[in-house]
Image 1 (cartoon, one colour):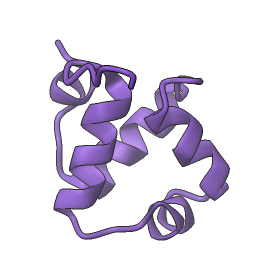
Image 2 (cartoon, rainbow, N blue to C red):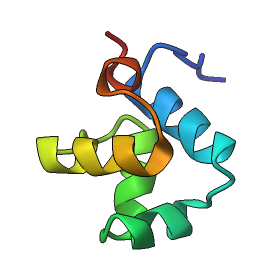
Image 3 (tube, rainbow, N blue to C red):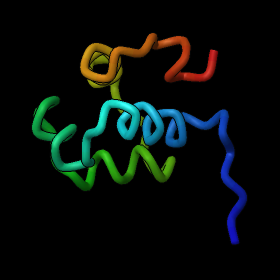
Image 4 (cartoon, one colour):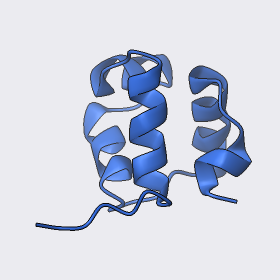
Amino acid sequence: MKKIDKNSFGWRLHEARRNKGLTQKELAKRIYCHTTVIAKWEQNAHKPSYDFIVLLCKELDVSADWLLGI
């Protein structure tokens, strides 16, 4: 079983989304992207662009510093 890195972007995104009570599909709709994009970000398979980081922070009420693990 793969160890979860709680400092990773994907884990932080997953936790912030769950804390807001959103599914991947709901979050994707709110930031105008596809559900598979959210899934790839949460799996740390891809990283979002600056524009999506801004949208994620606004939608999830978290700071970019926290989301990025700074």
